[in-house]
Length: 550
Image 1 (cartoon, rainbow, N blue to C red):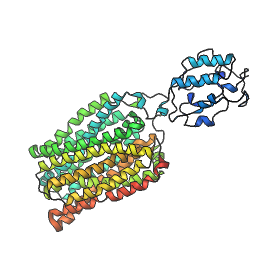
Image 2 (spheres, one colour):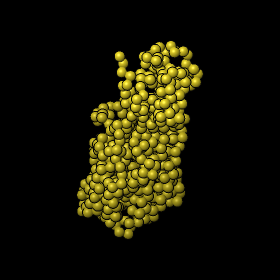
Image 3 (cartoon, rainbow, N blue to C red):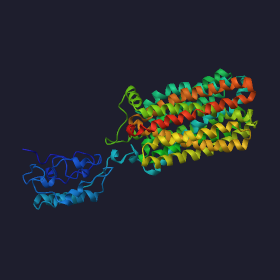
Image 4 (cartoon, rainbow, N blue to C red):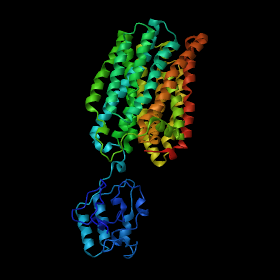
C-alpha cells in the first residue's frame, strides 16, 4: 500500500504543510497549477503537466484518470497560467489551492483549505529570479562593491596608459627608436598579461576572486614602482612585463563578480559603469601624468601612480565579498568544466568566434593608436607635452564616459525587442567610429583635433561595453571569466602586444620618407581596422539568437 504520509515537499522552494496533514492529498507529483509548486519550471510547463490533481484523487487516496471525477470547472482551468520567472505571490498560491478544493465537498477539501490558509507560500529560487548570486546582496551593497571595482579598473588603466605620456622623455634618456617604444608600451606588457590571463581566469571561475584581485593589484603596483628604478631600457622592459602579470588578474575576475552581484536586467548598465573606470584612469593617467612628468620627471610619475594601488588592494581585501562563500545549494556554483571543455564549448558558438575576431582587431586599432597620440600631438601639432596630455586626456575621457554609459543603456533597450541587437548595436557603433577616428589625424589644429577625437571616442566606447555584454550573453555563467580571458588573450597579445610595435614600425618607415608626418600616416592605417571589426560583429548578430546562454 502506498505511504500517504511520505514527505513529498522536499524541494526547498516552498514551506512544508502543517504536520498531520496527509501530503498525498495534493497529488503524486503536483497539483494542476504546477507553477505554485515548481517555481523554477520553464514557462508553459504546467500546461503539459501531470493530469492528476486534487480533484481527480478519490477518497481512498488512489489516483484516477483525469476527468473521472467530473469535468474540470473553468475556474480551475484558469489556474494553468504561468509567467516567465515562475515566481508567484502568496495570494495566487492560496487561491489556486482553494479553487481545487472547491471541486470536492468532502473532508479532503476541508484539509486542502486548511493547508491553503496556513501560509502556503512560494519562494522563488535564485535561478528563477536570475542574476546569479544577486539575491544575496542589497542594492546598497551591490553599488558599494561596484564602486570598489571601479577603483580597481581605474588603477589598472592608469598604470597601463601613463606610459604613453612618458615615451618622449624615455626616448630622450635611453635613445631608443619608435619600434622599441612600441615594444615597451605594448608587447612587453601583453606577453605575460596574455600568458597568465587564461590560468588566472580559470581560477576566477572556481576560486576566491576577491583575494585574486587584491593580490593582482599589489603585484602591478609594486612593479610600477620598480619601473622607476630602471637604469637601462631593458631593465625598464622587464619591470613593465611584471606590470602585465599583475594586471592579468584584474578584468576577468572583476567582470565575473559584477555579473554575480547584479541581476540580469542590470548587468549591461553595471558593466558599462565599470567600463568607464578605464575612462577615469585614462583621464588621470594622461592629464595628471603629463603634469607630473613635466614638473618632476618620468620616474617620480611612476612612483606617484604606483603606490596608491596598495591602498586599493587593502580596500578590496576588507570590503569586497566573494559570493561563492555565501551561496546555498540553490545557487549555481562555480564551473565544473575543465578548461578544454570550456574552450571547446565557446569555440563551438559561431557568434563568439566572430566577436573574438572583432575584439582582436579592435584592440589592435585602439591600442596601436592610443599610445602614440601624445607623441603625435607633440611632434606633428607641436603642442607642449603638459598641454597635450591635459587637454587630450580631458576631452577624450568625456567622450569615453558618454559613450560607455549611453552604449549600455541603448543596447539594453534595443535587445529587449530583438536579441540580435545585442551584437548589432556594437557593430554599427564600431563602423560609425571609423570616420572621425581616422579624420582626426589629418587635422593640424589642436582645438579641432580635440572636438573630432571626442566624437570618435563617444562612438568607439559606446560599442565597447555593449560588446562585452554580448560576450557574457553567449558564453554561459560557468565560463564567464574564461570567455573574457580568451577575448583579452587574443586582444592583448595580437592587439595590445603587436599594435604599438607595428604602429611604431610603420612610423619609422614613413618618417624616413616624410619626416615627423610619418606618424600621421601610420595612425590612420591602424585606426582603419575598425571597419573589419564592425563587419565581424555584424556577421555575429545573425547567429547570436541561437547561442544565447545565461
